[in-house]
Image (cartoon, rainbow, N blue to C red; front, side, top):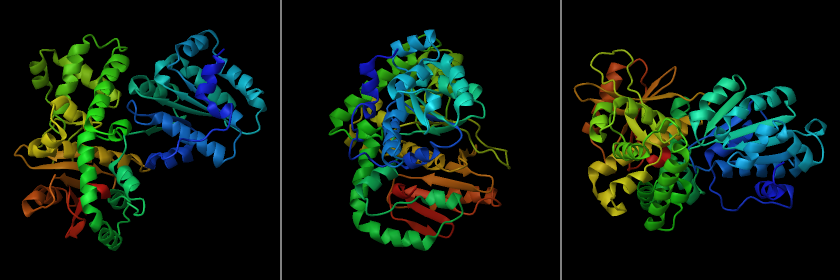
Length: 465
């Protein structure tokens, strides 16, 4: 049976009055995930390490206690990081039912209200997924299951296989720029222009009016953006008191990732070469992936490079986006582009200080592009049907940084770390529109200046993405 002290440490609401820690930054995904708790699916929460999954679970618990007035005895949280718990479950597969009975005072089937069971780091114990499927099929809707984990290596493939037709997945990212800006300026609503464009409900007059209110705060917005580019948006890194603490946290994160997540994977034969590849990919964020070049630079086989990149993708650190190859197909680059899940690691790996990074125009441009990529992904992940994301590049050098593709439209997006723009900055947007005119209505240019709408181009600061 689970250790009583550990259980109450993980479930403090079961022992005495409990309150969520104050002053948590409001996150867009929180309301969406809470709304899904009472759906007919097993909820699966994924995301990179330390992006705030446990805090989100605690927000769910707080909602159940305060808003739904549910008894604390109906809410259970267990963490499969606990070796003893995993060992007990191997010898007694029904231990979870025994825990519910022991700590609530009655078996699951006798509860009038649903019992919510939150299981964290489930990728550590995938052999138990079949048992969880049995519980879901046997006890629904009496038992509500929420699973979370920081690696898709098991939670992604195994949940899709074992829980086919039974799961609803939500990915948690680091803070979004909009969440940070909204926290600094709670008096101004900051809706998403991209969301409105993709849902065909964009109203220009509303945004022009909002712009007049935001203009006086533009210098503060700029300062916050510079901090994000330097620290990244992992919660603890962004909230660090100074650059030294931020770097110390990111360094510890990298070591922990290699030591805990990667060392446990049998297919990583050489942790040192894996770490060198990780550093090289961080420095190449926003570039085309060239496995041959990586293999030559590191002195390792291309198959090994391919395998390591797959691990980075499945642990949510790296994302490759494919080029848009809709008609016309000819003369298009076919290699994917590299993006990292958080830009704070660029300074750590490059050795550039915050001031040096801001002064290096070529470097800051790549970091800003990666930041914009992450922000677009965070916005589109909240849509009912998450659209595809691509880039566009011809062999003669014409490029559009991002292309969002839905069933009905294509939205090309160009990114530039500048407070101004010229006709040359949008020439490739116009080329893309000419090539795919049937599906392109609007174009987007993300930069550091004010919101503007000229002809079919929307010029957006990052906080309005």
